[in-house]
Amino acid sequence: MANSHRSAETVGMKATNFQLVQMLRWSACLWAVCQLATVAAEPTAVQVVTAALDGSRQAVAGRLVVEARDGSLLVETATQQLEILAGNEIISRTTCPPAEPLSPRELGRLTLAELPAGFSLLTTRHYVICYDTSLGYARWSAALLEQLHQGFHAYFSRLGLPLKPVEQPLIVVIFSDRRAYEAAAAQEVGAASHSIVGYYNQLTNRITTFDITGLDSLQDGRTTSAGRAGLALLSSPKAAGLVATLVHEATHQLAFNAGLHRRLAPVPVWVSEGIATYFETPELTTTRGWRTIGGINRPRLDLIRQQFTPGLLDRIVASDEPFRNPDQALVAYAHAWATISYLVKLRRHEFGDYLAKLAEKPPLAADSAERRQHDFQAAFGCSPNDLEQPLLRYLATLPPRD
Image (cartoon, rainbow, N blue to C red; front, side, top):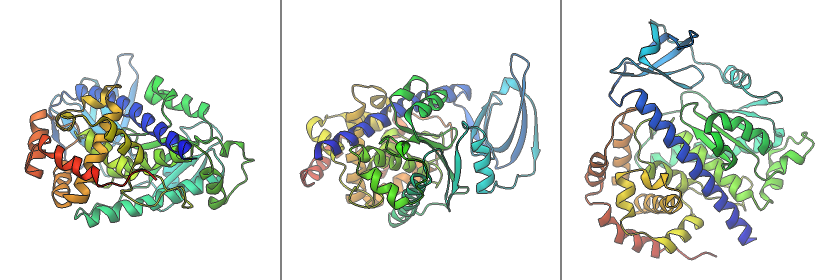
């Protein structure tokens, strides 16, 4: 059982890495469109009409987030999606009154219209869940997500970093089987859909995933009890990967909607991924499979103990490049998890100030290695290389695997 548990966790680690690489490619494309030179826009509502080369026209309405100096716009629509509108394609732009926020069911119905037939809708206080699994599976997922939402806000409040309430319910799409999931995910992540089991997309602001245990798809679809579905799912050898993936991606979604990060802002990957790995550790003895924030992430700890790399911390602070390299990415993830764990446990006030500084960075803003290193030095009073020995001493205090 111990080996199965560890194997499932490792699957989750690899899946997140593939998703990250794809997101980094998207970000590079978006930055190129806006030419990196952007200015913060006033929080106004606009309606924009664009014309493509083939003559087709598109009308986009929403909140103006960023206006680039070349006239390109970043607009957030009523369904939470970010649209990049190239300046040379805009033929008209008008200011309009802000639209009333969509109700959870309205938001859900619009999302269902984009999905294959057979999906149902479950709304909770903070989430809109579109699913074609059993109702019991959807309810189990919803309970886990709501537990994470509560813990996430409480945790950062204790760090002295109270977050803003999420403005609209967050959208989660859950497929029952891998084949349908891959067909849908391929439209967003391309060939990587075959290698990942779930992802959060900053453009759509949605989580997309499926039941990687395969158990729910074998049921007759009438299971409505979250507890009964949870018992079946958590008995699977793949349960740890299922829980870790859902919590990891939901942590990203919360961070980018509750004010910890801003969508498409230059947040260092070691920070965003380090926080997600800090939250993701499953606890399969509980009914929901997860409970404790900051539990020891055994796969990450084992890996960094085996492959601690001098100088890597300095490189991931200065650049996201190690996360793009398939040969270095998993080790970079382990270093990110360990560094976040160390900072939260032993330097929490400086870490809170550092996160607050990062939260001020606007979407599509320019960034540099020098700026990233300066921000780190200003927050912690030392260089990343100076942090290596304290980090190693901290890791040595963590208990070995049971």
